[in-house]
Length: 276
Image (cartoon, rainbow, N blue to C red; front, side, top):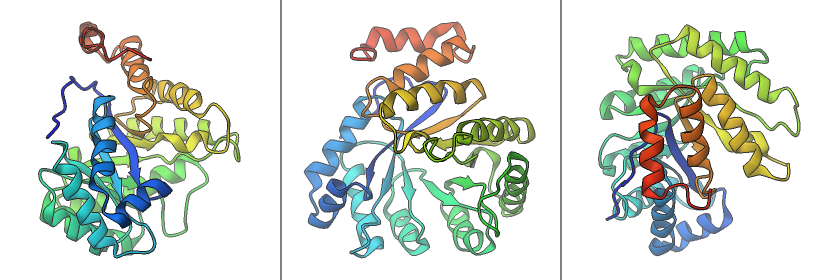
């Protein structure tokens, strides 16, 4: 079993690559190809991931069985709690029953049906949760409206005794290629969340910003720096880009989030910046 060997920066870095949206990962799940899944988990860990997002929604198999298999397979290789990425509460329950340690559920939103189906799992298993600022009427068009949805979600979660440290708000990132205001919208929403909900953490799916454009990794890393300057706490990202963790560490030094530059210098001495 591989264990996390480096000191994490204050930002939680979540590896995104164990996702059935990838044809190769989807095939590996269908074939029960444990060596491939475990090697991908170990590689993300070696490149600086603090935890891993796992998605087994292949669209062809039994998602509850598939997600359970992925969780057990990954945790047999890497000693990490996982982020369980599923829209199916039955699959989440099955995976949580075999998960070792404190999992995170990705995700809930502000619709009554989603909250009612997922929150009991959070209560039973003590999970963390990613909360998307999506309401009954869909995705709000303004930062203020997204904040209002977030307020309702937080009120529901707190009433259900979900502690603040377990809640990660997602301001929502969309492709800049189809909406050139998407980056600014995410930054404004994130800033609003940090001001309005200081006890709640924030998280983004970083790679959404660069979809459809060349030089995706450059765009992702640059946007990550801007988000960290606004106070981002966690990020689901392509950690197979060897420079993504380096960018996070360097930004945290420059914006004063790494006291005495201690995490940055430890990472340098460990060789983490090779290839960055």
